[in-house]
Length: 418
Ligand code: EPZ
Image (tube, rainbow, N blue to C red; front, side):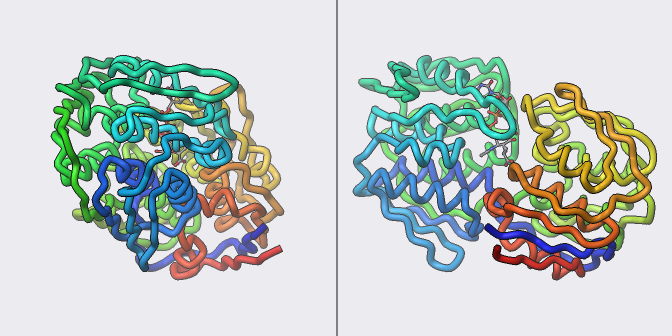
């Protein structure tokens, strides 16, 4: 298990380039099952969620190689339609493999991807949508088995703009008979990236980025070489790091408007922010002011994946802040660890009441999930004195070379194997 030893209180200066988006690369890997021709995904981030997804594809009989930053996938010999339970537990988001497996094999099976550290994470929206496409679904002893004679286009309405369910529907509908119209779709930039990837394979998808997506089924999809969109959540995490530490940082590769309300909130904290095309420059000017309220919402609202990081910022700012987490039931597991650093936060259900402390102090804290772990790292960077952040396996799931990026900006972060 690795830990970070972090010397707090150093300002950050310089520029960093965002990695490719974890939450785009994962569905793109799932989509590679849809063709028997080679697929190349450029600039693939070396993060453990990508390696877990590669293992799932290999378990189906596909060949996955990493040549530098290229992921080269050959599914021509893929013949297994069942995802092993160990890998579904490892990677919850493997559930959107169901759509691509059904499109390829007309059968699919995976273990029920149980809850995780941020909530129950049911998949009812996924399964109801697949049934609309003509899929028979049986759930027995924690296993989901899906089968159909032919996927048939349909009208589908999502009660909630679920990202994963939207992706599952796209992956299944691209090779269905007829047209599928999805109402109430998630509008995240990663959905637009998936549409572009599928259309580059010969699919006919229109409307991603809005809440109505039309998919005209096609017979075949061919191979593709593709560069994914950059990771707006990693970029947001780095911007928040600079806000907490002070200094001046430019993050490249991500457009400001893909960060939802983050830039507006950072300006409320007193940061100076300039955006130009896909460059975002932030200057942290001394003591921050708390946001009055941060409420997570589906895109383009405030991203739930930046909630923990902004709570860490508010914990050391002036005033009080109400955080409302609307997407996941228990996305505050990191709070007790932040309190070891002197944070004053009271959690009640989906609300967290933050009273800004004069300054957080260093402590020994442990990561419990991906974004909560990132929040602890950011808090340690701004805290007085030295901290250690344990169990980095959670952070390594979604942040490639995080310590290299932070130290290149002047932070004192050392990875230690224990
Ligand atoms: C995706 O998860 C992201 N993961 C998450 O990022 C992100 O937090 C989330 O979207 C919301 O933006 C990937 O893209 C791999 P949802 P997903 O389906 O698809 C409920 C990170 O840190 N729901 O939009 O699982 C669900 O319980 C990760 O990078 C149902 O009720 O999210 C949750 O409350 C964490 N029934 C809400 O919808 C369903 O069938 C949002 O879930 C599906 C979801």
